[in-house]
Image (cartoon, rainbow, N blue to C red; front, side, top):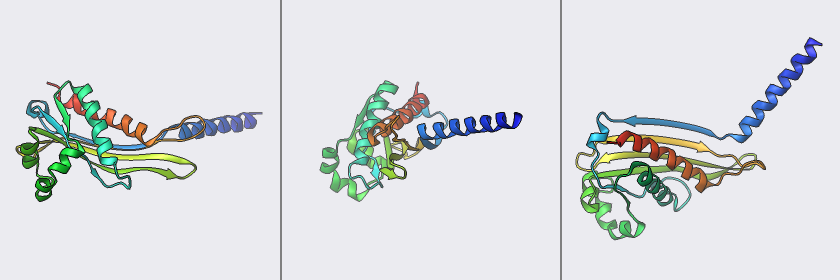
Length: 188
């Protein structure tokens, strides 16, 4: 009788663990805040299109726009996103020094820049189509080039008959999380 209860308890535990793993995605993250970052951040903050290392042609701009919207809401600061049209108009100038914060700040009229990278923005085909997104973002003082804040987040959503994530929904949730972390770090 005791043996039967132990087997039943083990079966229930395994079933619960399997259910939880099917409903929750996997995530990894890292985070850094410079000393006195809140006092050193100057408005306006410009969010430039994120470098796109994914296979999705618009991932860098999609994530930058999501991040800008969330940061504006969470921080209460003046935050502007640099549109693809502005980037195209400045392409020749930016191609000479694409990641020079001082030059970018001067061209964009911003004192602080949010720069980032989209490493993954795709559906993984394992037991269905699970969205996978990996984003890294950093807040840079345009004048000195010093990184005041940086964070990276990678997450895989789940698609099942109980729950379905999309790439954009997953990216939005991740940008909201990153923007809230940044806003908390730079609140005056």
